[in-house]
Amino acid sequence: MNMIKTGAFKAVVIPAILTLVVLTTGVFGEHAGKIPSKMLDAEISAAYNTDDYGNTTVNLNADAFPTDNASYHTARLKWNSGLFNLKSHKLVGKETQLLDVLEGDGELVVFLPPGASMKMNVVLGTNAQVPKTTKFELDLISSSPSDNGVSSEPVLKTLHKEFVLNKSLPGNTASTLPEKYALRQNHPNPFNPTTEIEYDLPEGCKVQIMVFDVLGKEICTLVDSEMPAGFHKVNWDGTTSDGAKISSGLYFIKMKTPKVEEVIKTQLIK
Image (cartoon, rainbow, N blue to C red):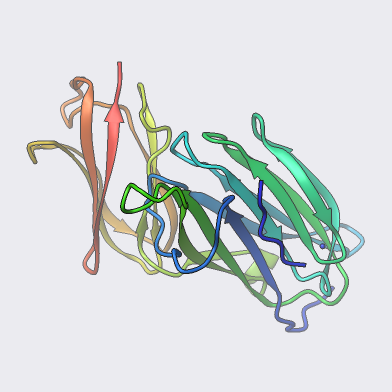
């Protein structure tokens, strides 16, 4: 396996960057592009915690859930080692493997075999005063078969996400807001009987989440209301708006806002 390697309180504003990079085995370079949603998805969240003695830590949670069964991935969770130090880490995921702990460089490396999912929890102590605003970046890189179907060289495709953690809110709470609108691939997929659909709103707006069959007929409306900015989720139990169960097959989930419309595919199996 080839790995791409890179190199482990009262508020004063200090910038800090945490990066979760999910890489695949293969060749990186001219084939980089946008990742299709079916290949890989991931989430990252962070929150400050302060104990009774005034000690502040950062609690990080990173999830990666490849939705195909053909790609290998390497997950790199990285933080600013000048500001933070690793206190503990916990990896959950069948057949996932912790490859390296680079405390001096501020990095954890995890291997994901085909079809595997990862849940990583990391607790970081602080080496300096806590940043007021911290920017989190999430880069996902996944391999797919060559575009022409002839070359054996994998095509690497990339998705970039950004999050902002703000410590200046009342009550010392942490806040993460998405940078852009997004309708995320539902999981599990295929599903039976229920699946979860996550969507991101960088600002408050009117939102509709609807389900259609392959003929374009509306099956049900899951969301139809004003929603605040943030990360949201809704469940679908495979029924119509009248509560009737639908048959197995392919369906389309659509998010509609005043600014964007996005569609994903899902499959119900019985």
